[in-house]
Picture 1 (tube, rainbow, N blue to C red):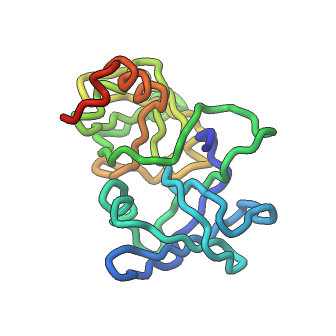
Picture 2 (cartoon, rainbow, N blue to C red):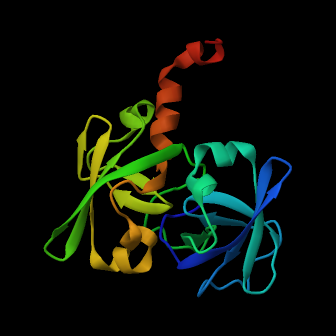
Length: 203
């Protein structure tokens, strides 16, 4: 689990195809890896990845076919910048919201414009996720815990303060940028609970 508070910006160093899936090498910049061990999880642009090697300047992780299908990792190249967050501990400050690192799908940046010192982004989510996105609710975009300011159908608006722009990859966003989206964890569980006994029946 994660909080959605980004700790560092990393860089994709290498991507190695492996029999249909992928091995990924991430240089971690200022992220402190002194307490990271093989098998630990690191959120990488919102994707929960398991560390399989620690070469010294970053970490290596394997990416499954399912993760490639649902996330923007399939579009990454050497040099791509990524948000990084280590998994939370009992002593972690919960400054964001509960983020699982299980990306639901990708979304598209529709527009970006300035509003005083902030930047306003409109993002288009897949239609199937629209019901989980609520005004003033929480959402994770590339692993960043953010508050939804406005919703119009499957489109939603985010107002981003200068600190968040500086400390995350959102400064790189332009019209057409594909981002990883994770809707609020509790919204998904609530929907399932509301199905009651019908949840046990196949579709």
